[in-house]
Length: 399
Image (cartoon, rainbow, N blue to C red; front, top):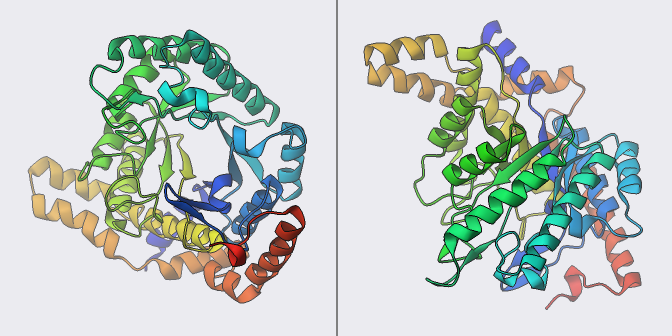
């Protein structure tokens, strides 16, 4: 690999920071049941330590996203949680309100027919923005499970209007340096219509909400065969691409490990972002975040695998020769244009990434280093004993 390629890779990796989700370190499952792991995090402080472990090994995960309902209580306050993160040399990242778990949200949160429940949901969002301020977090991420299961169940246009109203109220409460990310999802748990079903709806709501509202793209929240990189290109051009939730999917919102099914799609998404920076001379401000459910894989190992895959695919995308690509595109040379992408994707960047890690005093192979450290066995033993003391379920007792 020549020096120019190595320089591009170093520059790309220096600028890539990927936020880890607190919930990705805890026990998770499916609608049919939860699968326990002895090494899974028990509380927010375990989650912080696990996220910090991934950051120390990869050098690319300086923040951890939190879920308000799952990660804060009277003892786990914004102040104590922030101090715990600081002590582990990471920061609290995006704040995620929970608008889907409470029983009152059976018919929706912002879109609920009951204005009292709407106001409860709105207040929760306003409280979450206040928590973000206390945690010095610049991002509040909104995902709504709102929708209906049957034709005629509710007035779709009414629901659209109340969403606009309440999102504008949230926007008014933001500080100057905060961003509201509006996520979308075509279905589940709503199966007839979802109030924010696709990127166009999210974009329109962001535009009506205010200048500090942008769109969050979850790579699993699309219909089969959706061209996600086209969505990314459009949102970049509109100045409204705010962030990603990274995962992969085979059928629907599977929340599988990034790149496990279609790494070339992830590469193409990154190539659109690098191409935008090349064409405009300015890298877009994008919040890269992981949102995966590690039901079967060990939590920390799956997160390291995700981050290192993202680094490799991001580095490959940085090698696209955009000068040649634009030239081939302008002359209609389809084959050479396509091969600009294919050649970059096929390039072996592992050596350059190892050099980058050596420069930053990181292990050359973070996953192998972790697996050989014995850390997994240590925390599994300690947390299993702590679960027994607390009377909680453990992997060995799960049936």
